[in-house]
Length: 154
Length: 139
Image (tube, rainbow over all chains, first blue to last red; front, top):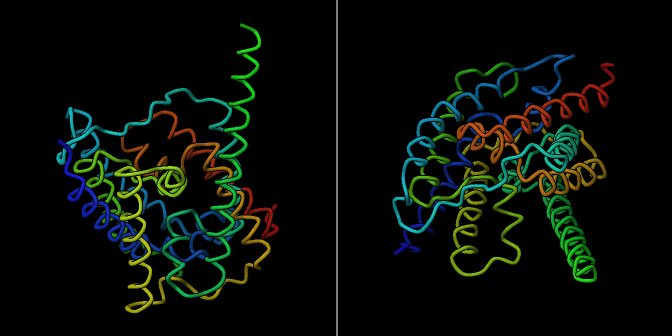
């Protein structure tokens, strides 16, 4: 039995904590993020400490989670199924990095920054969602075309 | 907020670590923001609701930052709106093709020691650095 109400409450708290952590860590400031990426200029390595802090906690709790059959509130774990380092992973990560460098916003901080009430993050988030939906539509169409071709062959 | 901030950034990282830990242990879900946004479309029932609650918390957090300490958003960026639009589009396309972003691959994926996520993180940090080097004329 899965406790949906409890899971929603935990998800909301996690979203709030996530926003707190991003702000504390300096990730909601796109200029600071770009300063981290500016290794050949005035490099600010602070964001390595954000990653380090997060992973230092996560490595233990993810290990504990992997040992469990079910999450504490029931249901099943949504572990990613893909394991291979393939072309889409590399291409997607490369494209994402370019967008990250151009804007200084990755998805989480961009959403938190919408709260700032400035136009920039709103534009970044809107086009990000547009990019997601367009890519999903293309992927779906390709999958349909592939399965139609497979059906013709059989 | 500018300049080297090892203490604040480590503290922020620990709070992020707490958030990803609670979500995996209690809900069994990965706190990958691009996936949470992207998979909200077309999801129904419990698969939609936990995502909306998470995103609601994230947006609420942004509003609280604005009320309590708007400095976290930094100085108004000189990045133009067309650049933000093109960059945002690339973030959306790239995270969908590559199945994750800084949180899903960088924080959660490396925490669960996934080789895919380690590689993805190295790649997007590298192309991010290259992009900033090009746009700031460092090369």
